[in-house]
Amino acid sequence: MKNTLTITFAEIKSLFRERIVYSITLVFILMSMASSFIGWSTFTTANAVYKSSVVFLQGQGITNIASNPLLKISTLTSFDNLIIYISLIGALLAIIVGHHSMMHERKSGILQVLFTRPVTKKSVIFGKVLGLSITIFSIVGITALISILSSYFLPLTPLNFSDISHLLVFFFISFLYMLFFAVIGLYFAINAKSQSLALFLPVCIWVGITFILPELGTGLTPTALLNPVTLLQLPILDTFFQVSQKLLAPFSLAWHYYTISGELLGSSFTASLPILKVLMKNILQILTLLGGTFIFLFLSIKSLERFDSKGDVVNE
Amino acid sequence: MKPIISTNNLTKKYKDDIALNHLNLEINKGEIFGFLGHNGAGKTTTVSILTTLIAPTSGAASICGYDTQTEGLEVQKRIGYLPENVKFYDNLTVYENLEYLAKLSGTDNPKGKIDEALKFIDFTGYENKKLGEFSKGMRQRIGIAQAILHDPEVLFLDEPTSGLDPMGIKKLREIIIKLNKEKGMTIFMNTHLLSEVAKTCTTIGVLNHGNLIYLDSLENTMKKFKDESSLEEIYFSMENK
Image 1 (tube, chains in turn purple, yellow):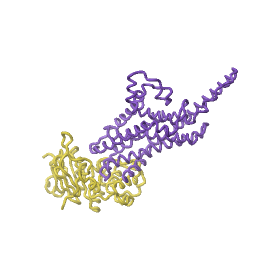
Image 2 (cartoon, chains in turn orange, red; image 1 turned 30 degrees about the vertical axis):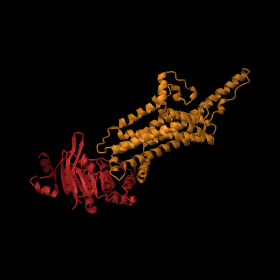
Image 3 (spheres, helix red, strand yellow; image 1 turned 45 degrees about the vertical axis):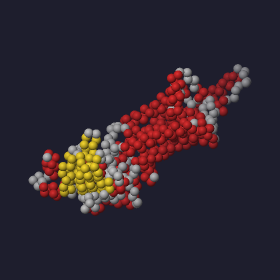
Image 4 (cartoon, chains in turn brown, yellow; image 1 turned 30 degrees about the horizontal axis):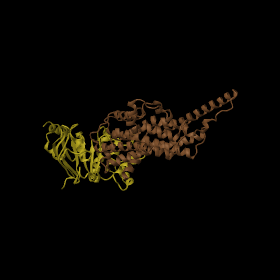
């Protein structure tokens, strides 16, 4: 345990001095601010359209006008762009952090030194994954803080306690989602013979999880992929997609992430659901995500145990 | 006297290639052993087995009486290792790099050991600089410092002077000899620089395509091959036999 923590602290210290990690944090902060701004902008535009419609209808002599539906929408929906940003950019950046964590050790030769110390290979992996987790958690935490603060700076309805709780749970689910991709990055950084292959293979998995599995798992309803609004989903008529949906939907991690996040943040059409209800409803999906992380963690431990640091050559 | 490093028919095969062929080696405490051989002769494979990094295909090796395969942790407590071309963490300071490895080596007083090691390699005053700021020669000295933090009985150096300028080589040579004289450390050094062996080592072994073709003290070697004017000529005459 002592060795694991030593490796964890060195990992965090080293990662937070890397430009790539600074850049990722900056990208996340900008994404968060952009999401809040786009949300506010959309709300303001729609509100202006409603007001001008009211003026127009009143000019036509119509007095029975529906109340402004936008007033019923939670401020949380202003952040729903983050779901897309995190699943597309966040997951990719997590792969880079995971990749960097192990590839640096291989390229620099530190692994050879580590493995001649009284340190088990399990300690090395656990220390690294713990360090990665804390790093990603910190990045997501900073983004969460910026998101919450931005709702006070932009002329949005301030977030109440329930909204903040929903937002924090959403960011925690995002952390778990990113951690899954970071561990994939780590796994391929241990196994691949070249640095480019170590990045290419997890990116292929990311493409599969983000684009292919959800398409097959949802019966090729692309609108549903980009918008967590279940009302927009069309019924699946094709037999192939009916079968593919049944088989692949349980493993469609991106789709699970969209669903859980959509239910937590709500949308222009649906209100956010209570946290406990969302978590209970999606418990299997959350377990699938955690299971995926543990499978790649286990594979990483096994790979490192077989790792031949003497014969290890990393090509660019 | 029981040898501090011992191998018994140590063999390593990579598919059909024999990297190391029934190596029998005994090195006594306090020696500076120079392991000579051309590139690919099997020197790094030998060190990798002795430092517990890889398992042999057959045969056995022991350090301080502990088997490298079955008592790996005991071996690791007693050895220090500086691989060829190791870079450590460029973005951490010298102190942070050493602190990390000192803690992983299980030292009781990391700070005291780091100060002692830095003083030994004549590096005090630089501990708060990032490692990336140093030349290769200085990094190799830090590499030696990390390897001696836990006072190992045996120090393995893989091509320690590779790529260094003459000043860097001289400084490193002085440190290696000082470690042997003052700390009584047994040193196992892989090299293909004959001049270094002549100036540093007490015993030499020559490996050729995985086979140990020569093993004796430097003194005896010089006597045996008195007709040859330099160690270089001795080496080539051995390799050509």
